[in-house]
Length: 476
Image (cartoon, rainbow, N blue to C red; front, top):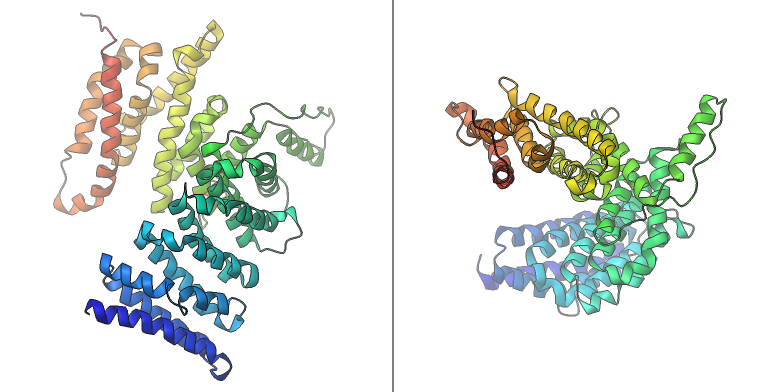
């Protein structure tokens, strides 16, 4: 297909969509016919997404009196075109991702049309499909003064949807709104400062308390959206670590119902930072989620630990056995996406605990005894993993990365045997990963995990070598 014919085709697809809209009442299958046109447009672009093709498609989609935006605006209230609108929005997600910053001259107009669809169209699946496109626009427009002027409008619209005013939004829409508001906090912190705390943070904590602590109908997408929003919120805003209220008085004689109410209230009285930690820890609990086909909540919880574990050092220091168990379980899960985020969560979690073990944080004899106890627990975990015969590459890599992250702690609290193993034994184990002896049929099975973990292993060895320069091993 030549460039000139491509440009002509793109224009023709848009013209056909407008013609179908004009004949809406005369066509019984208008939605089906229009969605076919969108599919043809998407295929024509995706076959040759070259810079020239992108420029021509950009012109066809956004320039002229009849373009894709005027079609979406005209059809925003037309329930007969639901499928067509969903497919256009899905294509726009792909196109914006492909076009990148070239979309910026049209970003404000596209954002305005997306909000129009959200406000006018009542179909949940149509409303939900605006968020991936809108999220991409926010990332591309970060720092743009034009988009900064639009933040107040977007924040108000989506805050209304999560319950600041009467809202009949579905769980899916509420979850998407909660997640998107966090994205605004990440990319436009100065303009979200007035909404962040206590307004937005209060909504996150309220929804998570309802979904993960209280006995209400569980809506996974609301809980997942709230945690996903917090992942981005915490990039620029740090919640208070001071409890806002004193803990509730302990009731001596308690029924199960009393105990439940007490525990709910006890969590509510914790500091905002501690509450976020509690909810994230509950999100990654394995017993209720291992059989689910959808992993939105656990992925969000793991992502929060992957990005922000160092904020929770104090709490991780107390709960490390259970958190380690959960993260390790997800590291071994069959779901590829879950496993990958769990691997990052594992490293950041260990970093959070290792921070607590630093010499500057251990001042009293009691604190040192506690630090030695925690250190010995983790070193035993790492050593058990590494010494297990016929260990999977993933588990071996986890043990080696653990030693790398705890290299400084090993120097402070380890025995001579620990230090010697860290310097000598780990090199031999790394050879098993970097240069394994495998058959050709086995090679493809281990390729992904072996090379995914290799940069982390190099980092681990680097950390060990740095500490090695400050350690003297006694000569025999």
